Image 1 (cartoon, rainbow, N blue to C red):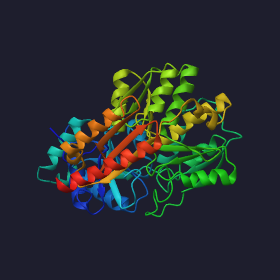
Image 2 (image 1 turned 45 degrees about the vertical axis):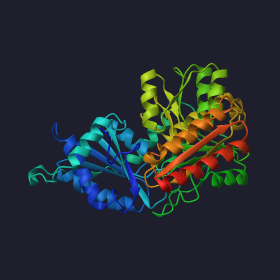
Image 3 (image 1 turned 90 degrees about the vertical axis):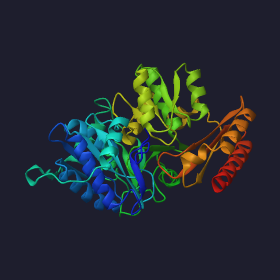
Image 4 (image 1 turned 60 degrees about the vertical axis):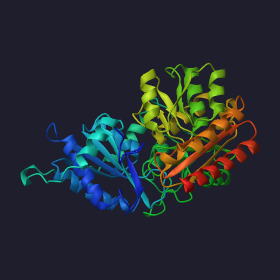
Amino acid sequence: MGRKYFGTDGIRGRVGQHPITPEFCLRLAWAVGKVFSRQGNCHILIGKDTRISGYMLESVLESGLASAGANVSLLTVMPTPAIAYLTRTLGADAGIVISASHNAYFDNGIKFFDADGNKLGDDIELEIEAQLEQEMVCVDSDRLGRAARIDDAPGRYIEFCKATVSRGFRLNGLKVVLDCANGATYHVAPRVFEELGADIEVIGVSPNGVNINDGCGSTHPDSVAEKVVTVGADLGIAFDGDGDRVIMVDARGEVVDGDELLYVIAKHRDLTGNLQGGVVGTVMTNFGLERALEEARIPFARAQVGDRYVLEMLKSKGWVVGGESSGHIICLDLTTTGDAIVAALQVLIAVVESGRSLTELKKGMTKMPQVMVDVRVDEPGAVATLVGVTQAVQATTERLRGRGRVLVRPSGTEPVVRVMVEGEDRSEVTAIAEDLAELVKREAATS
């Protein structure tokens, strides 16, 4: 049975348009409250990023949960992985994050964690969707949920991040630029790195409700790259709006993406005996990472796109390190979900303990030219499976056999079809990607 509302990472869309409306989110929260309170009283946390719509959605979610009899703790602005951590350590039954991650401010979304800090399973999401079809009925007044704020949430999460490195680990002498994307890490990330001894410069720490991810953060690494070069920093770290993705730049201002960060983390862990198996990437992971890990005799496997699928494969294999090119990196021995701050610290462990720069550490992996074109369509899932599209993909795959690969898939978070082509020759790859993107547009227009 397919899911009607849930995508690969909760429910997301344009604010004011279904399903991200006050009315729907009120019903959604009520449905969530009903599902989680079936075994008795339940306690649910709510956190958010810095989008202006977060205040509106926080209010309706609180009301919907309380109307179903669920008790609510409000965490205010906190990174997504912080809600996962606090849900687990505070003994809550579930955690809710109001965020659209790397999207612009006019989008928003609702993401969920279970009591263990993991993304909800398909069975729970389907149960919530089934509850949404029922008539919304408020519980009696003596059973209404209560709401309270947890004021020390930032401090708890900061201490957790610092505890993911060994006692005595210091960043003294390292000059680091942090770009917090005017998002959820703006008030916690600077404290983590500063308290560990780094000399920090910060940008993207002045959120106003509409500037989240706007020309800054992990989706716009040029900002942090420019700052690194200007101030002569050793490296730069760029987070996305909700703090679950990280991209870095080296001292020369060259971008180090999620695949390269995975390589740095895995290679150092392997050398120090802390890798615990292999590495999980996705179908979008650059072939250069697979080849570099093979040379290092480190096992590698590909999952579907989406951190939940990376997580599932890690658990099935008993491995602990995985992630995506976008910088969504999971260190399962430290966290239950992608955590940008924790992942960045893992890279810095490699830098400090090896005594080598980020530039030197990434040299062991040579990226293969990869071009991705997003095609905006109304129904990405249907368009990606049209006969004309699948036949073109098959023909292109045959053409690139042994020299590259092609992937056309619907996004799980945006109304786009992603066309990815990878190969040895950049000009050829670019031309093929553009041709396939035009074909997708034509097929979508005539279907």
